[in-house]
Length: 145
Image (cartoon, rainbow, N blue to C red; front, side):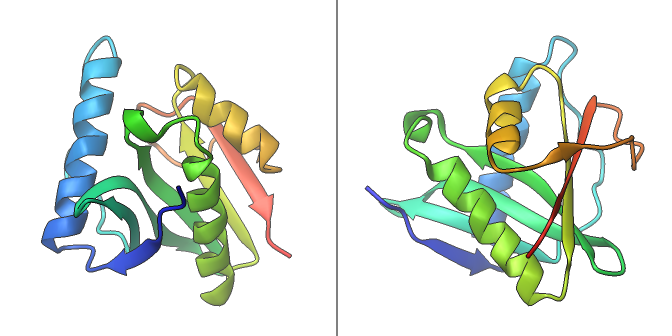
């Protein structure tokens, strides 16, 4: 099954619900919990819906001229292993290119091994720390063609 991606209002109910799933999962996964504080609002939020509920999400935030950051990617556990995460990542890369970006960056926690494998497979290369996210341990960048 291929879920369709839709762009939603970053402050709207669908984005809020999807991001709530993201935060709850990380809070349960990280030994000391997860507190996102008050993150900067995303400029673009994409979700995949199944039966009217979000099963995946991710966003973009411009962090430098020509560079977007992929933020808050999440795929529901029932959809993992189906390629949905990779499709979402490619979709976000396409949106970043359409916004004029020539590169995308992202960060992740070292415990998220499936995500790290996905980023490696998608052609991301490791770079030096570029932000002060206290949960991030690995930093990646990909040049968009």
